[in-house]
Length: 419
Image (cartoon, rainbow, N blue to C red; front, side, top):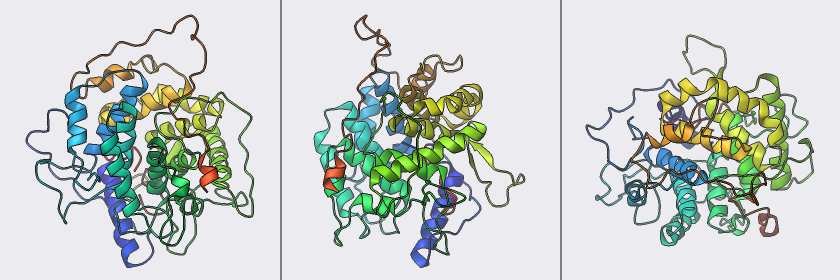
């Protein structure tokens, strides 16, 4: 999935959502100051920064990453996450007092809910909580078949994709989940795909249409949409690399074809510099695009899911060489993104450019129950893992910064960095 929930990204997302309610979702605003962090953070929560916008997100990614590398998390950490769920099955970005029932003013969050459900599925033993979350997501599905960040706003590619991944993890068959208009989540997701004939973003996905209705290529949206379009959930492992990704425009593209077109755009873009870029915030001193660590990690995951992890080698090497300061600044969600990228690629997250990402992630939260790395047996050493995701492509049978500028998949470090 993409640390995407930086305060700046959230401010941009809020601007998009507010603009969407009034008209087309595309306005951007300069970031406003983040709320002051609480005097004392919950003992089970990962990270030390203000969790207002990304508490559930970063907790979910941390637990997903630990599960991917066979770390058994603290019961306290898991209990904190399950305690954040509202009675109706939804999750807010963060509830400072989980004993207080969710009310009409609680800002429910589809992205946080989808991330939490994937974490709970991966951990196992939380079927009731997962089922309640799936029911709530169905209740807030838009008529176009997709989802918005907060219910009530127009659908966006990121939110729709991460919800699809959550539904796939829960084996809820997203291809059969229709809106009142009879549209599926895949109908909405494909609507954000750029055709292969687009000169600036062939095969990519947009976050939302811009004010003029134009789709603009967005790295965050594309990474998330590749994962969702393939019916994959986190964590991802394999499959073995296949041929080179291609872009093919069809009269009525399937979700898988659109996802593979997106993989082609990611591979082509990464081949230029080894990383994805994010546009500067309005008013930034440096107007040049900046490297986007979170979305680059997400792109590695997406390419691995599509069977093209060989096309992510340069990006992984770039992350190994350059991501340390970014991860340290952004905390658990950033470390988790890097762990998930290394795991999907087949690299060792315990030796990532000389850094032990697993130990660094573990140090941001309560001590895990077990941190012992599994030792491959002679019979399994060097062989491909079948992957944690069994959704495959069964769905075929069933079937912010500003909009277009991206909010950084699963807000770039989306929350991944909303930190």
